[in-house]
Amino acid sequence: MSRRGRPDSFENCINRFLSDLMNKNVVSSLVKAFISCFSDVGKENYISIFERYSVQKLYEEFKCEKISGLLRRASLYIDDLFKEVKNIFDAAFLIRMELVSRLSIQTRNPMIPFDISIAWDPILNLPYIPSSSLKGVVRSYILNIVKINKIDDISVYDLFGRGGRESSIGALVFFDAYPVACMNSLIEPEVITPHYKEAERKIDETSSSPVPIVFPTIASGTIFNTIIAIDYSMLETIYENKSFDLRRLIDFVKENVIKALDVGVGAKTNLGYGRIKAVSQTEYVREKSI
Image (cartoon, rainbow, N blue to C red; front, side, top):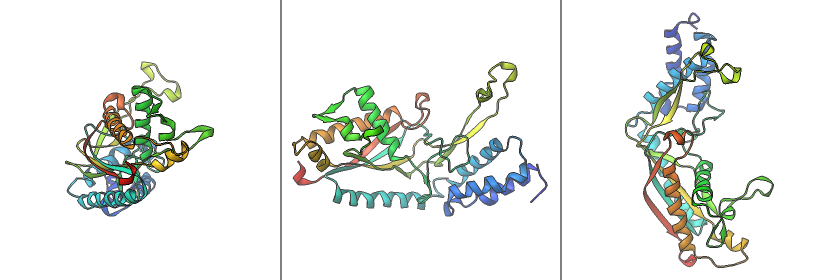
């Protein structure tokens, strides 16, 4: 290793580990770089320096034209998954959706060594939107904004599942959303500058020491594909073979998924992050179900 503390040496170290990322596992590469490059920069402000260089590398390495193969693979994966979902569930729809604003998602991902992290699939090697985030935002929208507890006599909790001691899965099955197209770069750096160290109870102006935090976001204009399925047979079991209007249920779910996504997914939605609009939908309903 080069002499400790030389910025050029640190940058070379980062470049060594974080180049050609489309052919490497991004999560493990970031961890390796975080550990291996430490001796090149020393202890003081190491995390903030590491984040600044690393997020910039993610921006450069995930230019859309460079990762076209990864995006194509994600698209094929969703298409193949949709074929299988149609064999299993009574109804399903594939939603193609566009990010209207930058997305910050799963900011506490423990696998990536950033203060503000991002959800990253180590297999497809792409950032993604976890199914739990999609399910949570739609469930919250229906309960807190639409403010209903039942849909056609079906409890919202039977559709989305229950937590706590009565934990159960629901009849609505959400799948992870993956990027399939983007405009310039899939990853864009974002910066916040906390002025106060609240954890150390230093809130006064004289004790403030601003340290910018650079973190990765998914760029606006990115196109995602995802799948939502309805397990109608589960509802029949729960309600002892009572018959429901599946067409009405499908339309209600589709309508409110679109409205919920427009409110925002992920972190910082109150600042305008994570707004999504549906571009198109491909619907499947088993003929005997309606």
